[in-house]
Length: 288
Image (tube, rainbow, N blue to C red):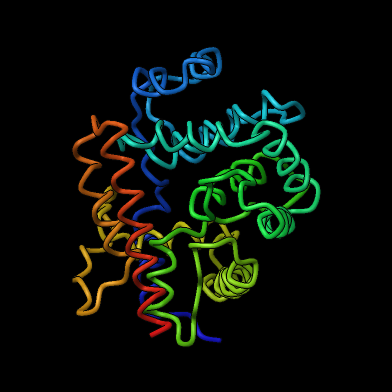
């Protein structure tokens, strides 16, 4: 196993920049309150200022009740979606799925006692038996919830986020990689963790401060983000590949709406329908 040059370069820039933290996510409390009126007390308990990784970890607190699990989930979604206008709508859909608070709590208990991979595997098993299990919650944002749950306790290692940006970076920079972030695929998450663990050790061969897996995930994200330029050492925008994947198309469409945060429910629904239609078409072509 080798450490990709792209990651080494990003790590060196990060070191020179003083290991700067990821920029916090701006969010609009009013937009979230409109979509989640039944969770007004939770939203009011959160700061209106931008929320970063460190802030989120401190704000999670104890997760021992369904209400506290929902609070941790909403917090992770606010951090993950930031100012994107469809974030509250998509979060509401997950919370409206059957028995969502209880299911979020059971995941929290597993994540905090056994770690992120165990929680990921649990979700995969439950999804295999019941496709409605936390419907609309995919690994990209599900692992953001797992990250906040695990990074806020000392009993387990922080569970890194595995999203579409990370998966594309792996496809480009890691030979033989096949990370899958559309279904819940614990094999992919295990592969992801294995690589991050190796890189966390190889990158500090110069005797610098140790890295945990979440640190390396952040570097991978910074290196691979094609529409995020939030720090002085971020990568330049990536050139589009000749053959664009369905995930790339949908991600770019969503990225456009980042600068139009007042996107309504209907527009957000259209994005989801487009993704479903493209995925279905791709499956038909593969069968043919």
